[in-house]
Length: 115
Image (tube, rainbow, N blue to C red; front, side):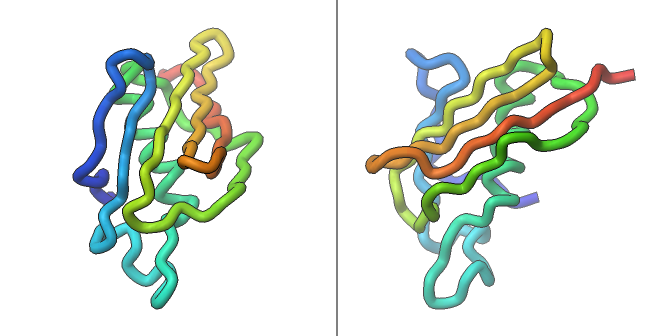
């Protein structure tokens, strides 16, 4: 499990909102890619899912991803916001990473009720 960045803070005025900045030496950039590090999509999804559970409580059993879109690479030390929206009736967690120049990535994690 890749740790969260050191600069991760909940936005008190935005439920499900976080500000973050992934420091250049963070293990998330290790090997992805040498000479031009970017934050992998898998790590972006993992952080959204983990923070979703920490924010909204148990979400259920992960079933899949929908509407996944990576629009712009996330680079080291880039200021970001992560927005999470939980729709309990649909059992869906929507996430969006937003940089200073617009959207970076987003998608929907779909869950089924826990047994």
